[in-house]
Image 1 (cartoon, rainbow over the protein chains, first blue to last red):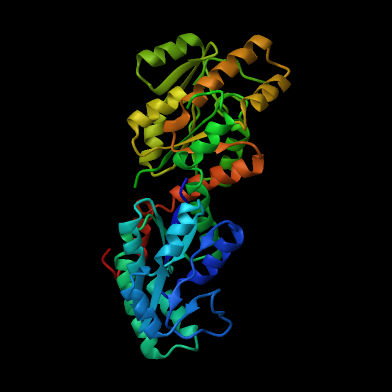
Image 2 (cartoon, helix red, strand yellow):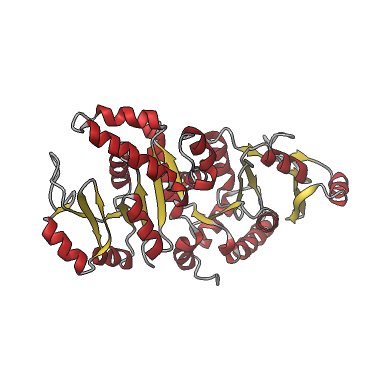
Length: 203
Length: 203
């Protein structure tokens, strides 16, 4: 049986990184596709672990070679998910978690019909603005652009399967975990195991 | 917005009662429809709380009056779920949990298309048999009948939405909780709240 593909998307400042970390801790068997990016590593980020950090020239060659399931330019940087890594993981039966922007989510929905897409939201636009302002690293212009992006993302999130509001972090983590856990209990996922446990019964 | 209807079904000995109790503790806002039954109260059971205990004559009059969403005869006793109570609860926006046999589950699926049906299974037929034998109250004939029923139920469980194996009780509880929690995060359930939080954005 093929693995299940989970996608998590969120505007900047919704708390996606923290929640993805919690998912990775809870579900050790969840394969996590490492994206390629042309942006510079932030403090503490490790090449090949957080991202594959590559030059724009290398990235553009990979686009030409159609090596990406999706790629997108966000705030002037290129991000992409390797097609072969993803297909390979799913075919081996591993569930895969992808951390993608909304454009990436759309591409996944088109190519992988059974994927499960989760969109994470801040509690309100005001709270999002405050959160973004607290990041001392970002200029006012960057904050403005992110708020505009967030508004556009939220306007277009209604085709995602699940919407999770990150008001209380613990609640948001619990809800995201529950989406993955419950998807694994779906009848179509569970039937092979049930058939083997109840081999005396034809079902 | 109408409430969500959850159904949990299981063969005797799968541990349904314990798991339903856990759901009721965790989700205080989950309305729990009290069934009518003609069977005698077991030790500790309270009329109007565990069941509405009624005579066969009263029950049959209610059937004639079409007052049941579903009713079924199980092991010589009649069980039924009041139609008006259920519709009323759902219309008021309450999520309702129904503990029904597989016949009841079928009737709910036919009448409430958006209901979420969970089937709980024992880890194997051998383990189920051992569990049933440990109940000192049941005769060998009753055990045999229940095993036959369980086999038939398991053969027909594949149209349920979720299958949960009660091997480790804690895991089974967590999985059942996650089904309810994640269903509440579905986009169609969450959109009204999101629209009100982000009233500045048309979505």
